[in-house]
Length: 282
Image 1: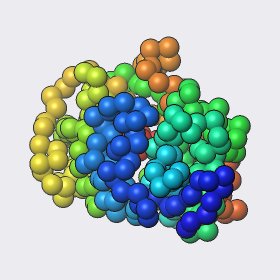
Image 2: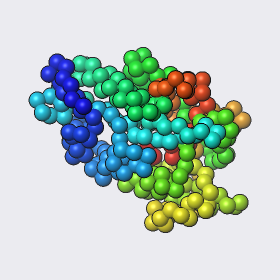
Image 3: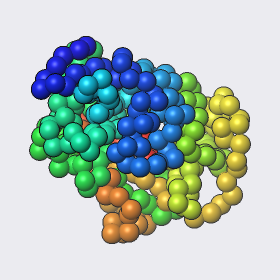
Image 4: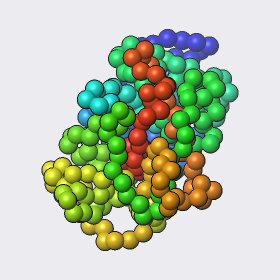
């Protein structure tokens, strides 16, 4: 797609720009961030078994100056599969900020996604971005991801929305080149996946041992002995008593959602369950 507005041209992500262009833009806007490397962005934008990245870019005089991208996800509600998108990256060059480009790119992306059959957009927004999503783009704030201290529990699966975990998706997910994952085997045929961030171990999910055995062993080669850890979870369950105080969390992690189809509404989306592996933070 190509259209112009006040000397800007808009293209779908990866149509005109390549991963090298996105790395260059991110470094111009945010400085060096080892996570936003060529390998990471190529993994995120092009390797996802649920589909290539969705979104739009803005160009000015042939140069990429703004970018907004989402990645496809498959969720499930009982036995029904739902095609959705996770909002991940956005950047606008300093010389082109305050011109409404982010809103323009986001609306183009949501319109295109709805036409392609995606049913909702989910995001985990920080304190700086949540205002724009809720006041200008029609997202609802569903609450905050919290951290439990050394506490594990199984997600409910009936009458709630949760990630549809497949072998292909899980293999891709833990091949993220910016993170080293480890596992801990449990009894009763279960195993846990962990990631370390800023010296802290985060429990990202509890999975079938049989499923993890099918994953490339090199991706989960490190075995984690028992050690204190934190577990991201949403929605908040009042029965959990070992919560990390909200004031100690490094980010508020607001869960935001926007329906793209009349088949789903905010009330239904409010049942969504999130664990660490569902977030792009880890």
